[in-house]
Image 1 (cartoon, rainbow, N blue to C red):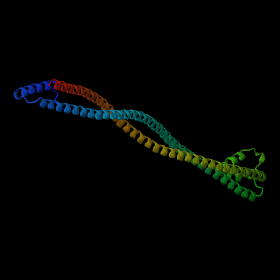
Image 2: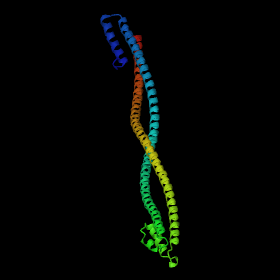
Image 3: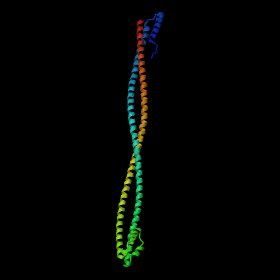
Image 4: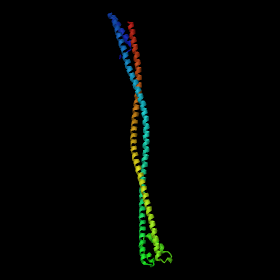
Length: 308
């Protein structure tokens, strides 16, 4: 590119030199005209070169700005999607955290209920064993007493009943019998009948006790099975949701990282687009100015040629 010295000034200088040269040597003017023609060709070529360069740069500006506009739009859309994903993942983490806490409480409750139920059952079994032994001992003692009474052959049975060592359950029944009015005189047949009835009563109560124990045992097993199933279900749900939470937290972390990167990229693209617009506009204005100056230069050359 030529130095930015006005062409008119350069042409005038050239004409002055040419005039001196002609005056001194009387050389033909054709030499000066040749120089002007050469300057015109070079100027026209320079204009075309600048046009080609500007056209290339303008195409670059148009394409790059278009690409950046699309990138900025896509970046904005991506940021919106990531922000929505972050909100979704955060909600999932919050919900799963609450669910895990609930399942943890369910497991603890099932374990506590199982412990309480087992302790209560152990006491039931201990009470049952104690009561069953009383019934068995009482029934056995009655059988032994009947043998002794039958061996007395009609003697007064009150002494035997008073001396009979018996379990507390039987003892209470005998004490009640012994406190009855003497009208009974504790005849053998009366005592035997009483003991037979008492034995039948104990046998019946013992059977009821055993039946109740069987039902309690079955009920306890059902309760323990239910509690075990509750604990298993809560444990499986907790394990599953813990895994889901871990994935949601990872997705949340990835989305946050992607969001920061996308915001940074969008900021860079926006700045680049803004700077490029300024540069493209500046180059366009510079091109217009240069083209006007080139045209003025060529016009000056033409006028100089006409003057010579």
